[in-house]
Image 1 (tube, helix red, strand yellow):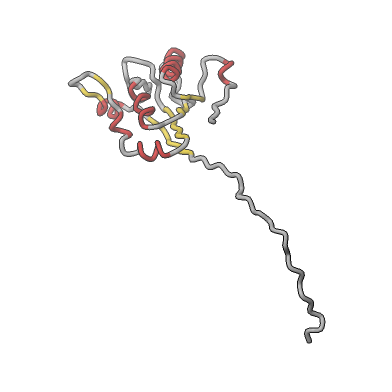
Image 2 (image 1 turned 120 degrees about the vertical axis):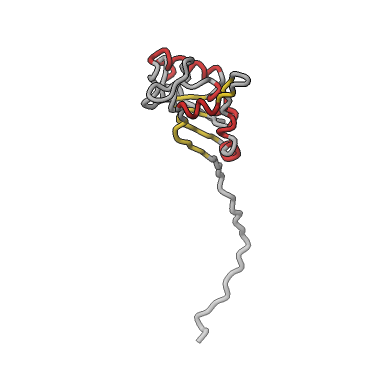
Length: 153
């Protein structure tokens, strides 16, 4: 019954398994950051005459900052005064400050409200974001920037 069985040769070679080289990145995408008049009014502190949007993002900040890259759609312009909501949005620059403070890394500016205040409003929005060192994409002042890539190291 066991006549065809043989003793297996002992294996002396060993194989070392390497862990796969993996890199993990966490992305967070938020929808429209709006600037309707009720939102602007709630951020206004009449005692000091400033707009403070930081409380708006207080509850989401831990989630936003936990991501490696956080992106939001800036569905308003930063076109300066007078500030306004629908249909021609223009929010205070402090909205961008609050977004940066909340941990957003990139703001997308290409949307149906990017030209609510015309070319000047678009240019000012990009200038404000650039001056705050907030990466932004979607609308461009110069064609040379249009092909630039946002990279992370």
